Length: 376
Image (cartoon, rainbow, N blue to C red; front, side):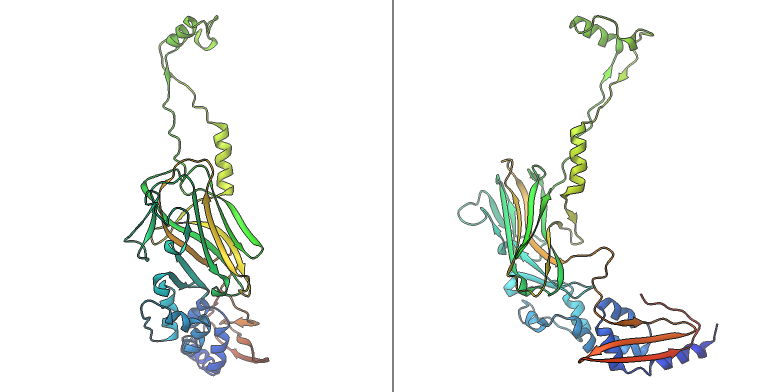
């Protein structure tokens, strides 16, 4: 390995790269990559933390969103503002929540229960729903279900408000009280509609209570044989009881319900179930959609439970959250860039292929060194 002189030479060579070129290249990647780039060198740190880089990660209408905020958002830099907006803020007089996805910068929204269309929640029907304050909600009120025989909850948001060319998921955010009932069966239906696209499937708001195992029945052989003979159900002695015949208790087999097993397997693969969030609430997927140019009109999200006719109670609705869909095996945070290679080795090439204003700007620098650091 080379000594400190080699490392210093590497740092010196990196610092020769034009900061504007480095900053522009980083701005074409992602917030996560920008944070990683700060660890490369002082020159990279300066470029990666610049306002120009982090302004590119903010939505184009970020100033408008700040103007709509209920409380003034204070920030010292564009990077500070970016991470400040990763925590939800209230906008439009508290009628909506807004935040950025931390990894991608994609816009996310929360529609509170007050902005949803919930059947039987309005009007002179206080026996069905009521509005309450919940200490764990970011909104002033949530809707609590007292009792209904069918549920119908819908929310809408204009696709122009969302980030373009982005995959989204919509979730119902809720809690259930200790006395909740009727929310596990029959299954509920959810859907998301945008233009001609419809995503729909079945869900279960509450896991069904696992049937308690039947208490083992202890049968004494002599008693069982005498009972069956007296009931004229047994003409010959039971084969298993002929020898020896004693009073040792035997446990009757607990045969599983085959139909219930098949249904459970089906539910695990085809029925959506709720997940617990970090903020203590529960959420259940309503559907997914892809927002292109944002000119497809309203995104309609629906949750309904109209089958069965059984009473339902104990549901507490905070709202509907719309945020980016996480794609397995795909880094949705990556942006278009022809090439980025930051690898230290015996022959390290730091190469940025940048397209700006229709012209390609290529900066390449050969560096020597023995330490190997790979940024992925």
